[in-house]
Amino acid sequence: MNLFLVKERLVRMIADYYALEKIHALERTLQYMQGKLNQPRLVFKLRQEIVQRKADAALVAVMITLLPKEKQEFFRLRYQKKMPLVFVAPKLYISPKVAGVWNAEILERLYALREGIVGDFILSPQALCAVESYLNTILDFFLAEGMKYADPAYIRKLETRKDSLFQLRLYMEQYLEKVNAQERQLLLSWCNDPCLTYVELAGRFYVSESTAGRYVLRFKGAMFIFWEALGKKMKGKSEMDFAEFY
Image (cartoon, rainbow, N blue to C red; front, side, top):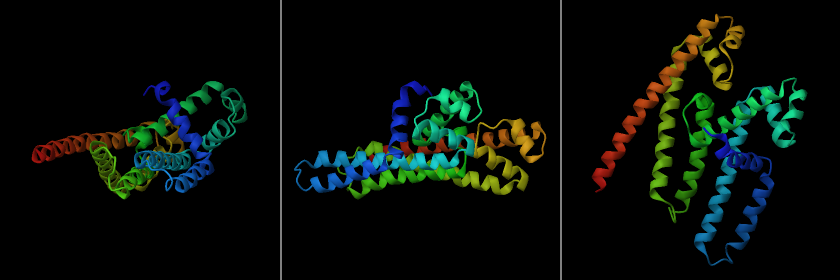
């Protein structure tokens, strides 16, 4: 991912999280005005933007809970207090370089959640639940509106993404239930902070570095194989539905 291309959008999401009252005020104003506006498409677009911004803010809130404590504090200083990285770093006893790495990791995680990109930053049951909830919020808006002004292809894309991520979450939960307690706890710790090294994981759970690496790599491999097979299955189903439609 090129952070430069999406950073503005991600920062806007974070800003919405810290300015929810402004979004609520905009919502109240629109509710007051929509009876006076004889422009249903414009009203629809404004309501869609409000729903999207509220959903974005909710996703940021969940992402923060998935961060380790020290990175939650980093996030607060960087984005709520709006402190430059060079000032954040000494407060957390890290170097400016590490602060920059943390900032990039957090933005990458948020982008992965928003786009439903299956990779290290979304491989946890909590993260997948958050993305499903995010997609449900947007889909419910369109369904409540009777699909007025909605792009059917866009709706199908959201529904397919939600269904696929739901199946991945079920598979992940089944995988974690089958492994032993130590491996499960180690994997859940890695899921909450994918940037942990194998050395750090090994130290936390009193296993060798190679064992920690084997657990994580086996888990990631299983998830990616399942996701790739699921993608092929969903693609085949979409092509069949398209053929039947025509």
